Length: 216
Image (cartoon, rainbow, N blue to C red; front, side, top):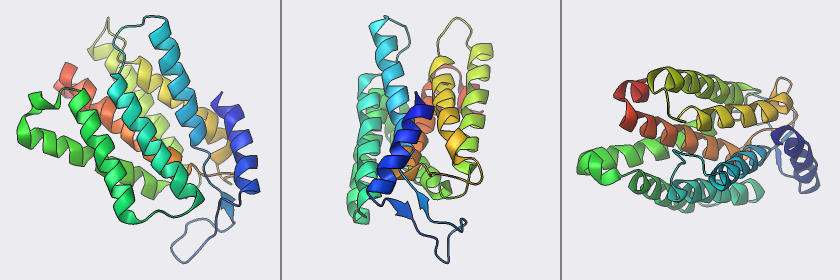
């Protein structure tokens, strides 16, 4: 699904002139369409909906799913036209607070909850910073999520904690086929923000099951 949607999103980005033009700070040398990460958002959201419909256990709270879609929506708009930094920060902060609260942030204590909120917002922007270098954001995501899925299956057998990082990795592989050097499309803010958000959220949830998973 992600592979096919990335093809369609590339055509959409070209039609809308959603293109990253290289500048003095860029790592790419050719004007490249952006926004392909929306394919990752859509594929993982559909997977979550199917898992919910099948009655699967250990599903991420819907507050987290909604917060992730908020991050993606802010990024999608920003990919079309640059949003003021304060609006982006507000959207990321609301999403971070919602996610931490949905994961039982009260149990972290005030200091822990504040640190968790900062962690989510930080990882959103860190991943966004890495986008724009051919293949790097996608390769990082696949590596982290695949390792997380394996570790979850080993450390927490009998749970489905491995499923969501595995799905995110698989969706990213579909996108990465078009983002591998030389990149034909970038994630854009819609995808990089969402991926950073999801990695942060999956890390925190894994830590509530086994602290060693969170550190890993």
